Amino acid sequence: MSDYQPSPPPSTPYTGPGAPVQKTNVLAIIALILGIVVPIGGIICGPIALGQIKRTGENGRGLALAGLIIGIVFTLIGLLWFVVVGIAVISGLSSGAYSTSP
Image (cartoon, rainbow, N blue to C red; front, side, top):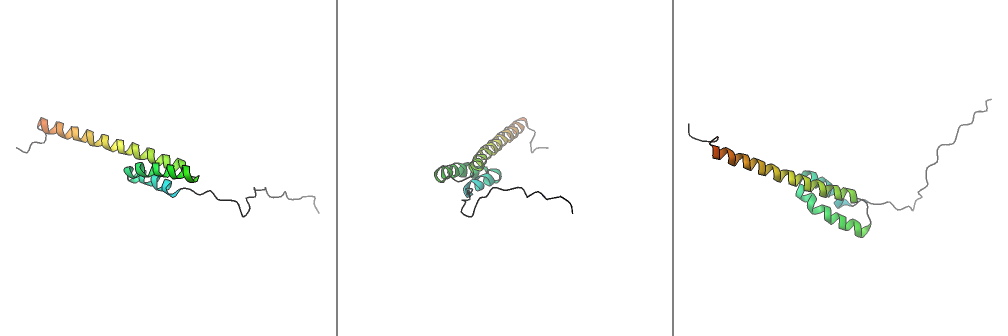
């Protein structure tokens, strides 16, 4: 026989059956998704989620902030794009580049 004794498995912290599970705010998740897909939705849902998180103590503050910030950035990029395209079209029309005459 050998003197080898296997080491015990590493211990994990005991959370117990009554340990509360911290819940993530659903509106914060929705704010993040909408901030990417429909930016104005992220701008609307983000602050509402932040208020709920402050009141209830749920997780998700970072998600709500990210949805709000991404929504604002994407909205500004979209507005800037429309302004640039609008200026380009107006500039092209005034220079005659889009003339319909042969």
